[in-house]
Amino acid sequence: MKKIILLYLAFVMNVFAQIQDPVKVKIDTLEQNGQLILKASVQIDKDWHIYALQSTEEQIEFPPIASELVWEKNTAFSPKGALQEIGVLHKVYEEVFEAKVRYYEDSVVFVQPFEAKDKQGQLKGAFTYQACTNGMCLPPQDVDFSFELAQNNAVESTGFEAELSFWGIFLAGFAGGMIALLTPCVFPMIPVTVSFFTRKQKKRTAIFKALIYGLSIIAIYVSLGLTLTIFAGADALNALASNGFVNFAFFAIFIVFAISFLGGFEIRLPASWLTKADKKADQGGWIGIFFMAFTLALVSFSCTGPLIGTLLVQVALTGSYLAPALGMLGFSTALAFPFTFFALFPSALGALPKSGSWLGTVKVCLGFVEIALALKFLSVVDLAYHWEFLTREIFIALWVAVFFLMTLYLLGFLPLGHEEKPKHLPLGNFFVALLSLGFTLYLLPGLWGAPLKLLSGIAPPITHAESDFQFSKNPLSETQVLLQGAEKGVHGLSIYKDYASGLAAAKKLNKPILLDFTGYACVNCRKMEEHVWSDSKVLNLLAQYVLISLYVDDKTELPENAQYISAFSGKKIKTVGARWSDFQAEHFGANAQPFYVTWNPNTESVLQAPVGYVPNVDLYAHFLAEGLAKFKKQ
Image 1 (cartoon, rainbow, N blue to C red):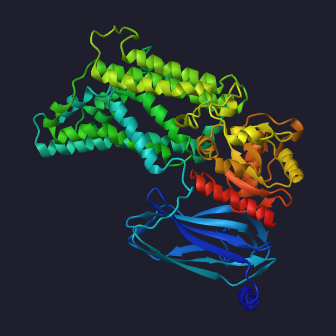
Image 2 (tube, rainbow, N blue to C red):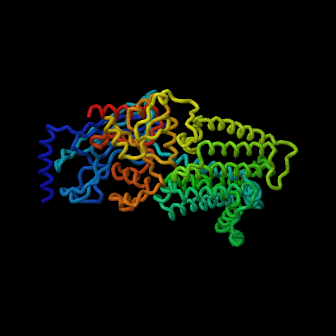
């Protein structure tokens, strides 16, 4: 019976479709960082909607037609990652389907990245959707597209990108592994271990054992990353960035790591672990080689432990489920490479520099870096809980002190622990000291308001400074008048940190709203403010909005009578940040920051599809201009 009803509805829809055209689709291509981006922008008339890529919450026999973006296979391009949908997702129970359906109203954008192997070629396909309203649906529609992509096509950049790509995580881990190789716990082990594989053995056997040894190192460290993910979970990793207690714990841990690197003490694992692993290593065979690698991990822990901890913290804060394992894959690959390489080519061992005091110098320099990184986590706590003791000036002054002391150490004026002032300054020390001193001088103008773009997302924002002085004032900030009830924000803009007060101001001024879902611990939010919002073109457009910045990690506790149980998540909302996070998730189906929504204050509805991190000035300016145009039209 249901099939007959659906067939009848299809016939009626076909007739109805003759006079209805509620959906406009624009499909184009963009290029970013060597990737091709296929983008379908959909505008939907009032009272109509189209279904999401997954049209229902659960599987049913006759679901509504889901939106779909398909393309013909092409050797020049291969899809990279899943198809993304960016818009305000609605989840509503519909009796026709006897299920909760998922759909978009007003507007939505579908984005598919491709790896461009060859910029010459043709990309063809179609976007399929079904428009529905009040229980009535039109027949599914196909919008065909075809793009001839020439070698010299000028295509603009887009802002759809992850905070840290998988390649970036792997390379960060690899860099950490390379640094670990230069520590006094690991570097001297290379010739000793390689000589074990090459001594009195056939070359083929030595190579085989070295490969097993290298793969064992990789397996040990990757399993460590996987263990972190399994026990913490993806959601917990994503929450780390804004959790005040966790960030304070990281601050304390990094200080402990720093003291260890500076020679205060050594972080050692229980001696019984090392003894057991050493006995297993004597067994021979594959198991013996694996435990040799495990023994290396235990012996070198006093140097690699802080580096592993630093790396795992940084990649865990990305919230990616695979990030810890991927970071450890990069770290262990770098660590295992020299052992395997020199076993393959033992004659190359002679090219290695000899062990010496320079290994201790590397370790001490890492201690200074750990102190600087520790301050970043303390800053997050200070911002989230409004302690306001670690202002931007104090933070930068501490970084200046750290890297100036590191410069003095490298030049031999600050011997630590049992070290004595060197009689002759090593050439390597001189060049590294030059870089450290240069970075120190770069930081100094930040004490008087210089933007310091290298520290975007690390140092506290300019709004968290002791003085109102700006190193280079934007012309807009000279004429900008602070709106009633607003705070003075970045670049002199008036911002509201409460939705209700911002909404009231927007209605009174008859201006559209820009909802800025942000966070004190959000690195990309600071990059947007300091690299994109600082442009005069963007600033002039922002001034035409009422800017409401909602900090999702604000730990200010709500009054008892304002706390509530979320209808969206079922959790009790106790803090200001949790309220704005719940607001974002419930209304826009998103929980990432930054997240920008152009908002009509009169109807309290979106003006266009929201966007996330858009590091391109022209694209972001276009987004703001389009929102203003839609508001004036409405």
